[in-house]
Length: 350
Ligand code: ADP
Ligand code: NA
Image (cartoon, rainbow, N blue to C red; front, side, top):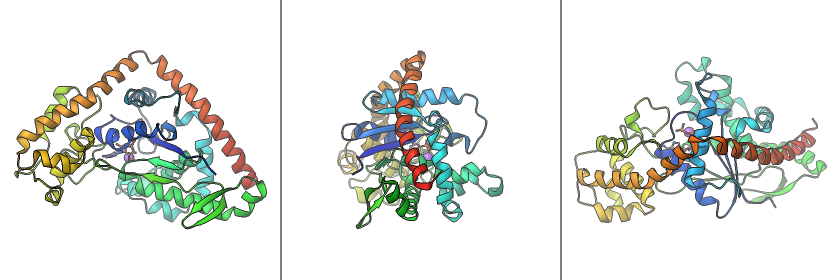
């Protein structure tokens, strides 16, 4: 059987925020106990929306620093950047020929990022989910921790794996590289696993602090909408103080958050930071005003984030270590990727 393996990636574009931290990076750290993990700075993805960047390598180092500062161990696991391993782009090309245009056209992230002028979006933006499938399946990863916004892309990854397994079933058998793959209730002889998304906990979708209907995002033009991992205590307190809320007191039970997206978001963030449930937080703060809750939330956020940002600054001050981690990780990832690409070429007959 295929060994359980985790893969996930973060783009080196813009500041890492609390949503990335709670929805992704903190889960990456936890999974190290139970799985072999591969964590990637997906630099090839970051040129899909905007081609020219001032300092992509600097951004790649900064995300790597965040991984290490949060507690990812690059010796036990693998940390690297995508463009170092040619298999990502190579397998993505194969998947461009497996996937159908209609599958890509349905992706909500493409529609959002392309905006009204779809004809003028890059072809790479349309094919983004195909590259993401390649990122995951190049390592035949079985589990992918991500935020809720990536759910649809993960489903597409599963569709690509299933179509590849199905269309090439005879060739996979002939090449002798098949494995028992669980597809729904059936076990078939296939090559790629049907990857499971890991989307759990109170912070799978952290919302903007300024608009409860939008997710917290690196690309939001308003800096007040997000808490950056590198914000200092003053900035964190100011942003939480200015966060949009409604005039009512906090409810004492989770049901009372229905129809109150801003309150729900702040309670969810607090619960995730405290590693407690929303119900426990409301049992403590129910009946109190946001004016009391917000300072407690700011204090907790500073307590949890300051050690991470401090360690990031320390690592970035002497980036040789980061560069060595990426080089070593790239070599180890590259060896796994090369074996997969050999099999894939045998299967297809390239
Ligand atoms: P962004 O969406 O901010 O540009 P990425 O695309 O690099 O960031 O996403 C990195 C990881 O962070 C992904 O697993 C994504 O699902 C997760 N993530 C991004 N935004 C949020 C959010 N607001 N809440 C929870 N998780 C998020
Ligand atoms: Na995203």
